[in-house]
Length: 93
Image (cartoon, rainbow, N blue to C red):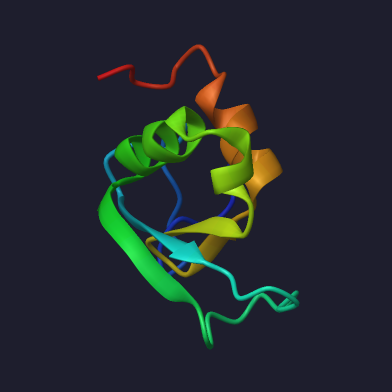
C-alpha cells in the first residue's frame, strides 16, 4: 500500500504506512455503501495505529459499519483494517 497519504498526494518516502497520521473512526449508516462521509457519525480520533487497534479490539459484531478515515480522505473498510492490524510493522502500543 504505497498510494497517496495526504490531500496533496504525497506518499511516505520509504513506501511504508505512516502509522502516526491523524485518523478517525466513523460509523456508516446502515444501507450507505457510498465512499462519501455524508451521514457518518464520528466515533473517535487519534493516530492511524490507535484507530486500527481500537477497531480490531472490538467484538466482531461491534465492528460492523465502521470505517477509518486517514489523513487525505482515504477510507479504510473493515477488511483492510483487520489486515493492517495483523501486519508485522503495525505498532503494538
